Each structure stands twice: as C-alpha cells, then as structure tokens.
Image 1 (tube, rainbow, N blue to C red):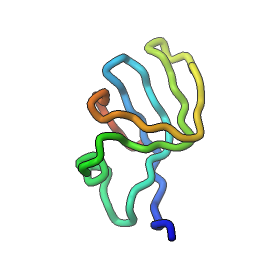
Image 2: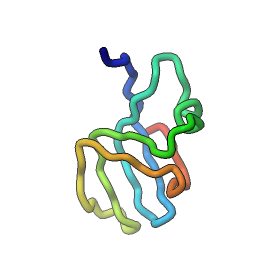
Image 3: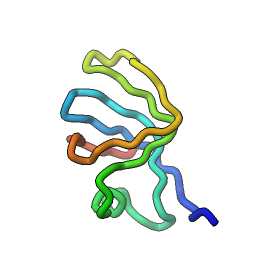
Image 4: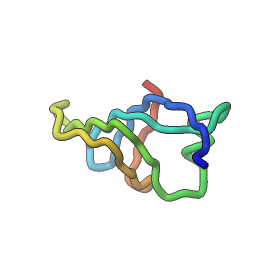
Length: 77
C-alpha cells in the first residue's frame, strides 16, 4: 500500500547552477522544511524540467533524485 502524499511544486537551485522545476511529494499536513530535514540524502522529484544558468531548458524527466548536498535553495513555486 502506498502512502498518500500531496504534490508541492518546487524550484531547486543546485551548486552547479542548474534550476530544477518539478513536483515534490510530501506527507499531508507536513511542511517543505519537514521534507528537506528528513534523514534521507536525496530529494525525490517528479515531472522535472532542468534549466541551465542562462535559463535554457536542457531536458525534462519524469522522475529524478537530487542529492541534498548539491542543493543551494528549495522554494515552493
């Protein structure tokens, strides 16, 4: 049985300068900071678009895991 989760659209900036725009799936009633501070080393995203420093779309992916050590900023969009 799968856990029911809410979809939260987010933008993530990485140390390498990429901007990731996608959906983070969080537990109902939890905050974005709760998901970021969980013990897991990565943030799962779905429906992700990846942009370079100039704002050009590089690629899109259905599913992606982002290593939290590479994340500079996470913001709801």
